[in-house]
Length: 249
Image 1 (cartoon, rainbow, N blue to C red):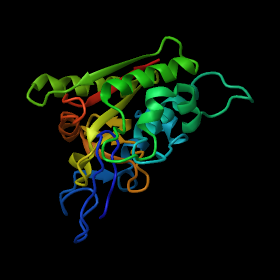
Image 2 (tube, helix red, strand yellow):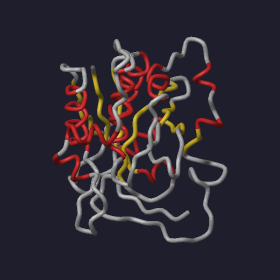
Image 3 (cartoon, one colour):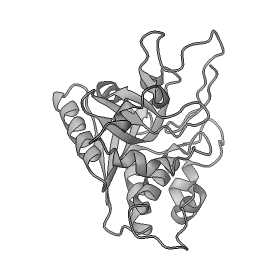
Image 4 (cartoon, rainbow, N blue to C red):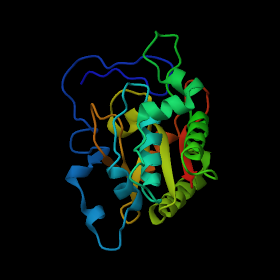
């Protein structure tokens, strides 16, 4: 597979053409399983998966290789707005409309590729800031977005991640956006990436990633332990570990 994408890192990365490789990891032992191959959790009685069903109708692709943060926040924001009173003149918020509202730093970071020295994509802290401002500008004046960094050496990191995932799965008033190294989940190019969480299957300890890189991927399941590994990687711009953002509204 030939890839070229830089969503969070300030560099342009690509995979050298070669023999075909499995899309989601080693053959016979994939890191991820596409949702279309395993829909059981979403059909089980008593498993409402509120975030998946709210987000499914607003699932959009990032419009370029740096815009995963914008697509992810747009999906979450429209899903949140679907849970409040709407009227005939209530519009769906488009990515470009949200970007125009926010402007400034976010707009610069998702601009077309300008060369190897350009910083593209969004760090974890910026993701939290942009998400909170987006929600507050669009009907949720008290919304809060919290950035959570993860240390794989700390056993409490997995405990906290699972707790937050279980809370998120049971609630219709929050979303989780993950900031991770895409290679750890898909065995493709090592690059920082952002996506919303659609559901958490606590019984099987797996997470549904609502992948915005629609040119190459679809929603897929990964184990929560592997997700931890992907989020505990280092962001080349900040020198800090990645993690996730909890949006409470």
